[in-house]
Image (cartoon, rainbow, N blue to C red; front, side, top):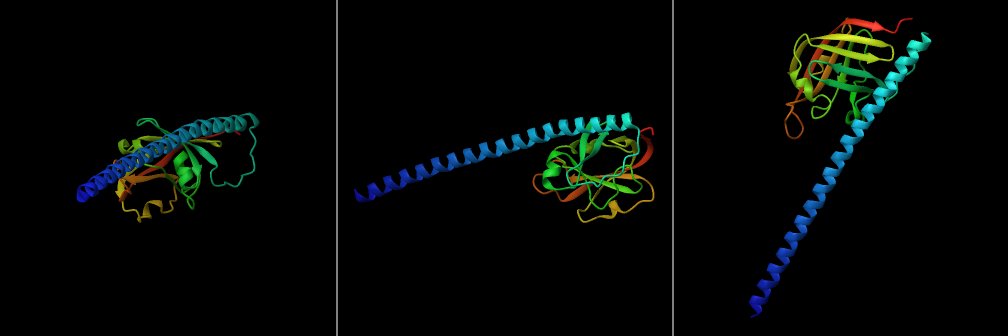
Length: 210
């Protein structure tokens, strides 16, 4: 009889443990889903706000038609909006590549020229959000970069996959170029082993009339 009582007690504790574990996993899943939903909503709302802010800056530039003194760019500042019409990319670009910045938009890689300036400007973005459609980019696709100073157009020269430590894609250039970088493969689960790179050269710029 004593052995039977112990078995029942152990079985009861095991069932309680399993119920508690399932409950814990359920709560963890709900919290994770809530965080992801919050992050996506925050990014969407921020994109709308950033694009409206840029439109206002463009309008101010057009109305005043004055050469404004160049302001220092701070981390998180909105630099412009990148659009790749053929594949449907449209994302606000912020200064810097912190985790918070890349959650809200694409980020300008510090140490590279600002978009529209001479040289090779680097832009990074997450493969599972704003830069997902880069997987469909092809040579000769047009990229537009709207800033407060004007609209800059680029044409894709090449697309390739490189190792994470390969910084040659950001090598300074004598021409005005744009290099978009994201993780690869696009549907890889966990930290991606490679980087997907799109290089484009400026073909036309249309600054604000002075």
